[in-house]
Length: 431
Image (cartoon, rainbow, N blue to C red; front, side, top):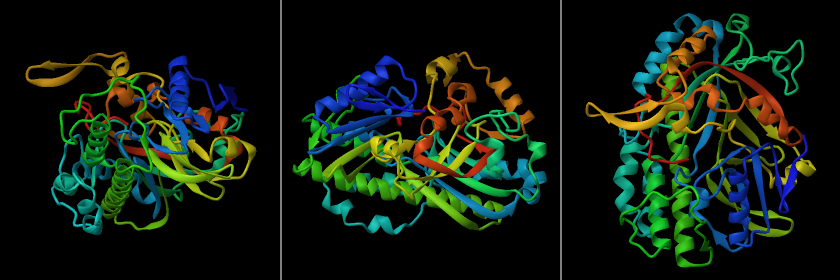
């Protein structure tokens, strides 16, 4: 499917006017030479999710967002479906009870990682005071749309981008009874830099507004104008250093959780793909060095691997970038997921305090029904709320189809186990 042009910028997929307006506003604010919107896009904080904006002289903490370097790691294990099939409920219980899910959670066994010796903690003012929080939260997953999944690899031809009479068109792809015992088992995780990344983002947004780094931070509205800091300034260089450290931190956390799950399975990884979004990259496009801000969009250069997950009931894929005119127009970027089409509040309801507990009330999604449907499809769900139900996301195949000229599908993965934070978790760390 070809992209269309909105005020000189390429747009993939169908989007509401507010999302499109956000992209144009961000691009115009810094006289961006290039910008693009991926097919999984939707309205975000300042810059749309799925939005790619390339600045020549600016870095944008609001564009990168609060969950710096949120990303995915997926590994193929040496196990097969037949080796875990009967034990799947116990395995998912063990994952849910071992991995730390939820906002503000501390790792009961803090990780002593080499990144805590990085001189950036000392060299960038204000980061030292965040070190304890970062240390305690490394290896925790958080809430929202963050997850730990078990998946099995299925035949790519059963789930081609173009549906047909001999292909599996169900949201969960191949039926569970059709999965061969020889199918490889995969582990996939999705989360970012946790409270450390949030504090870095809010602190630098405060500094850019002339406030103290650790001053009171008021949650910005979705329509906040982009915060742009000159790259050549002392503040810009400090933010870039802090962002890069948060990126290393996010990667270390995903490595740790994947290793935890491999330990539970008694397995080892035979193949891995690890990528991230919510970040700024210094790249060359059209002969110019540009700071490319990808918020909910992932780099995909020719030959580069990427993992893209769908909703808790949908397929996931491992893809490899290819060279094409569409790839160049997208600034060598792709989707990071299937894209939300229903707000958390609409799906799960508003937060209210009842009996001393925060609960959601008034949502349109019947989560009990969702759990029954997933169970019937052979998907073991642990945690997860109505705001993450399959119906609130686009079908992954539909989103991928828009970007088909930019990649080749290497592996198609069907979920059999999904673990997320409990539904009562409140998530202040926006993506």
